[in-house]
Image (tube, rainbow, N blue to C red; front, side, top):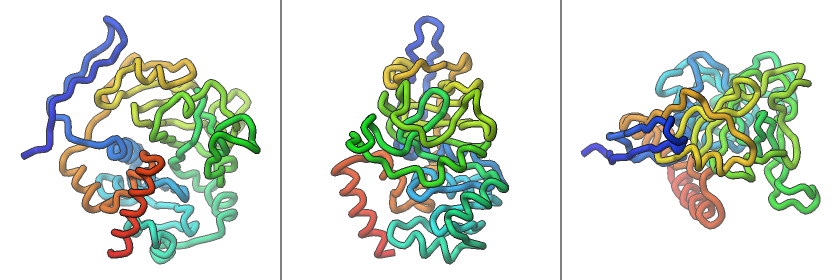
Length: 295
């Protein structure tokens, strides 16, 4: 039997709001939906760059390669490598697999400072904070740098590459007023600003609530995920959020596409790690490691 259920999406925008009814909504988790949204941003023959700790981005790239973009080049921060034939995803042997699959590799500094400015790839970033102009923070949450509320992984090469990138896509697995503040606690990635002299800021963002663009340098809601209202998105965004006049529902994957994702692209479930926290993530990590070493 098809895995379907009935769902109605109500966009709380008063009398002018369109209501979308989905009578064949697949049982698709939010991490899976984010993967498909990101994969749809990739075109065949794109050069796509991946960071060190971006499972959702990595799954999306491999998914796009299997679905509609077989001729992409993948530049990975893992082993600072470039490949057209990426390895299977792994948590315990990621670097070894990417080195074996690489057409070429370099130091991280050479890759970020020399190669990427010339290639100008499409890249997926997961920021800890995003303001209305697409500026990002991956340093820490909290104004006191020495005593932060949350210390984040760090900026890597984001301050460098965000200056010249013209095809940046952002994703935020947990949409909140902390993740989308009026003012960033720290600035580590360049978005849209009048003072900008290079690059163009992010073009696209997806969260667990919807999809967004930056048509005039300001973040705008363009799509709502199933069962999410505009009121909910607005309530979880600290800055004033623009709403598209042509607001749409996020397209759901087919059952065949979901099977491809779950059974072939990411059977270990690495994509789930970015939507979990605390004890749930620890349990998931242990389960992934146990399965990974048996393959």
